[in-house]
Amino acid sequence: MQRVVIHVDMDSFYAAIEERENPDLRGKAVVVCMFSGRSELSGSVSTCNYVAREYGIKSGMPCSMAKKLNPAAVFLPVRKAFYKTVSDEIMELLREYADRGNDTKSSNGSNGVNAIYSGPAPIFEQVSIDEAFLEVTERTGGDFEEALELGMQIKDEILEKERLTCSVGIGPNKLIAKMASSVQKPDGITPVRPGDVSAFLGPLKLTKLWGLGGVTAEKLQERGIETIGELAAHDVMELISAFGKKRGVWLKQAAAGIDESPVRDKEGSEQIGRIATLPEDTRNSELIYPLVDRLIEDLIAKLDARALTFRVVTLTAINSGFRMHTKSRTLSHAASDREVLRQTAREILEVFLEENKEELRRIGVRVGGLQKKKGQTSLFDY
Ligand code: TTP
Ligand code: MG
Image 1 (cartoon, rainbow, N blue to C red):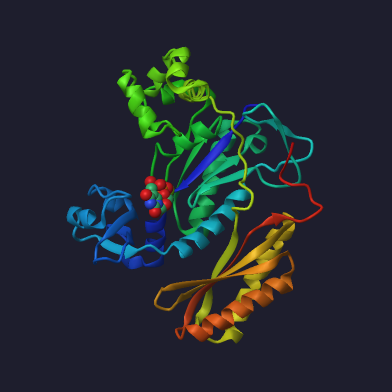
Image 2 (cartoon, protein in one colour):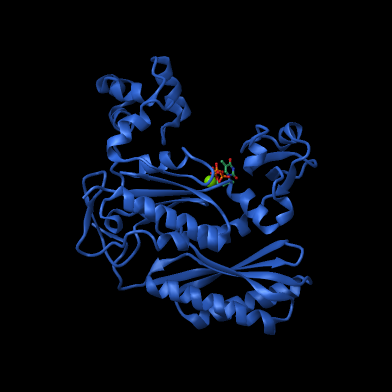
């Protein structure tokens, strides 16, 4: 069957969350900064919204330069822990769209080893805080029209549930899906069918090739190679003698759009979180506990469905002034029990309310340090 992979990348992620949380920001240039604290605007830009990008503002640029480019822009400090809870929710939602592995299905890894996916784990890979790959070959029957439909559903659900937009790339492998998602941004969806791969890659600048570092790009440019198409046409032996066997072969294959790497979760890195708004701003734990319990019910259901244990519990609280606090506790043993989670979350909340005197507006619970329950087969059995 034709392989189909979807890549999802959220649009101006941190800035879009800030805009969602504060409607006053709509239509304005919004710049999210990692302030160093040395002086008012010292630090660098984490990201900015698309209005700010029109002024030439970019990730990584000094905040002071961004201010010169657009003095009217709104500059906000990063709230990474909060963005992480939003990310967790999006990843949970995306997982539902990925194929499920099963005992009988095997897929060829890039090293030629047969990876047997066991259990009902989704074939899903989170790449960064706002990006993920989904294997959708089974679900779509290898059909790109079905995949396009699925991509639209994903976009609709994220917009409806999270009020955020994303860009989706669809391809016959991870490399193409990843590169396709960046073609139409923001709020785009781009399928690149197997027959269109060379036409898609060929004209692109070398530096657009996913996984190609700046140093390698420079060396290739010294050889007169400017586009991915030119790289694909280059003599493989020459690439091998310049970059070594592994890298040389990779360059040749990647430029031709060949990539057999499997979609797979990095075990241990995943967290599952839920966040919700309280019926009213409050410090009354009698009002807060029922909401925390509801979030916990949800988390336990997710953990049970995938036979996972947790070791870290994190509580997130956003106060009425939109300031955000997080507090974590690491357990001495892996746990999967609802009562353990409830008890731990309550203890953290009590300490938190002791230390902070403001009213709370939203509350989130997150579990991390996830592992398969003992006695269950692990994600990949070779
Ligand atoms: P990206 O997906 O690279 O950027 P983005 O989502 O802001 O914008 P785009 O629409 O182009 O996808 O990165 C995701 C988040 O990671 C981004 O919102 C902020 C953070 N980030 C940094 O903190 N520093 C950086 O240099 C980059 C590139 C991203
Ligand atoms: Mg993004």
